[in-house]
Image (cartoon, rainbow, N blue to C red; front, side, top):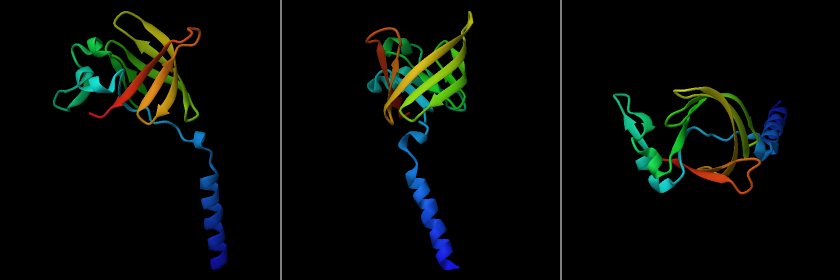
Length: 137
């Protein structure tokens, strides 16, 4: 009976290690700024719950966004993630955003550089790319 148990463990282990790298989803959750050095000037913690938010003059320091499980927040936008395609290195996210004036759908094409760096591509605009760095606040 023991050899069968060992065989299952080997098969299960083999299956786990056989998974391709791109099968793992990228964790986007957190605060992202255009400059890692400016994180403390772009984001602030406020209120009794010490909630992460934007500083008063966050745009002066390059800006950024806050990613939550089902939302992306900017200084003036609050976007609900409608769909997400993720292969571990490329993320394609469609969000429905509401600002004080209007509601719109926006598509984000993100490339993972490493765990703490992503770039946003703008298809159709040659050479247009913005880098974001995860803030450790």
